[in-house]
Length: 172
Image (tube, rainbow, N blue to C red; front, side, top):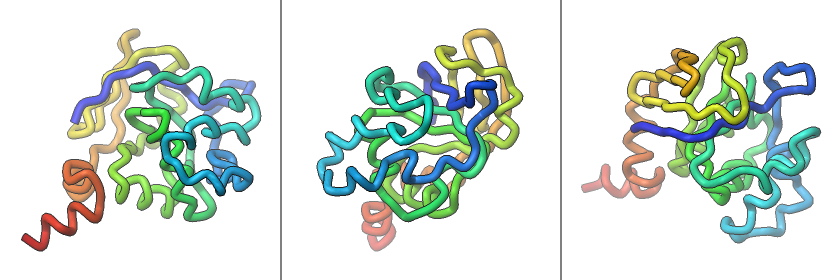
């Protein structure tokens, strides 16, 4: 799978990637009554200091880059679904919280691990091309970084459009 889009690099005011973004920062518990995935995007990252207006600035196809342990904390599926609602095409992080990673893969939301990407020189607004088969990430400014490729099971679940559909196909 190939992805291309404008990136949003989740950084601190000092320019470092934000680590340990938990599910409450991604989709705050005050919005849990919202069950319409189509409406969840408006709340994405609005509890993360400096990124409260992210949902108003992003566009379909954009790509998000974050630091280590993205999605730490609870098993809140809305923390994945809010990005699906915004039509974010790919989420790249140095690492993901275990439950978040599983939720994203199971719901066929593309995530890519890229340990060390914080030092690569990508900037918000860059346009990147990402090859999930190789893990290669290249910007229009010719910044190149090698992330990890998608696993076979991740590709299979993405291709099936989710874990449940994948399981149905496995029964055939």
